[in-house]
Image (cartoon, rainbow, N blue to C red; front, side, top):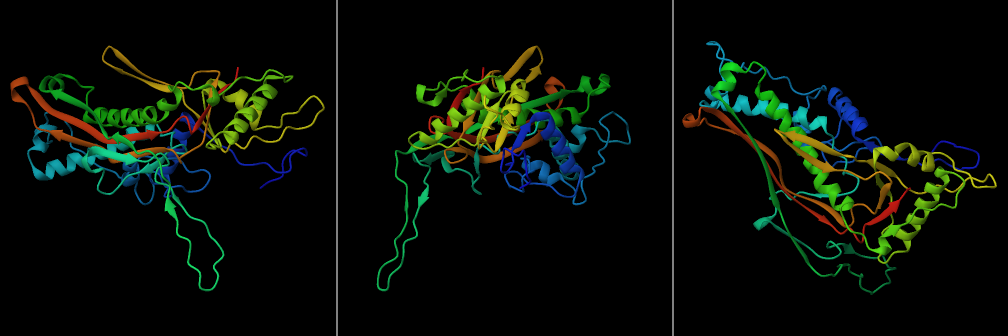
Length: 374
């Protein structure tokens, strides 16, 4: 660890996650040979990417190149409907779809990775249900001194009231008509594929972060803004100290190490905890042991005349999170995108459907402290 300000003994590492910087990092990971598959930690600068991006990455960097026949009615080039009718065409089309979707996924990076533990059984969840007890089937064991002739002490699974949840199916689709292919010179199947990728990652961020931002917190899970400091930075620092202390003293303990906040509060937060803050006597306050800051302001996706808004964190509010122990991402299967045959009665050239089946287990009361920072 490198030496910091004289009033600090050492400077800890903080990791900040926000959409634009994560997008840049994902792009760099695609352009270079190195990288990270979804959910696999790889050092302090690792980012969470979708599995599909990892599968499409070329070993030397970039995404695999794929030359796709045009969609126009050129007699020398196959259109989408004709490719669906042959086995070779179907394989080529699906490979094209996978690469385009990966580009769309990279447009909206995943932000919730440090907060949730990913559980994705090889065979999925039988019956579309998952059962987790109150303490998430945590195995507990202690090492005790072993004396000659004595028996080893065996561990147990923590007991609790079972929680039953269901795996939900999320789906979206496109269809394109013969008139679109005949007359619309701006349309191509790449537009659909990339839209699937963007919409899917926007959904995942919403599914995992909205339980935190939309929860009604009891009094013990809230920390009021401290106003006794001489500056806003000092007030925020003292407030986060109080929130951290509350999370440590809670029963059961939920030590908060991840801060979820709005991009609008970025500069104030980073001034308060990433730089030295001094009291009235010129002494530096001790560091608040927050290891990760996530900035999430939601997404807005317009579908026709409908504006679909995934709300983010409200300015002036932050959430101190005890990560992963009681927050689980449950994946039955990740995004699948298939293309179906034409419907001549409606002059539909083809249909495209994407779907995923997954669930979320979030014990918010025992994982999150809501913090007012204004």
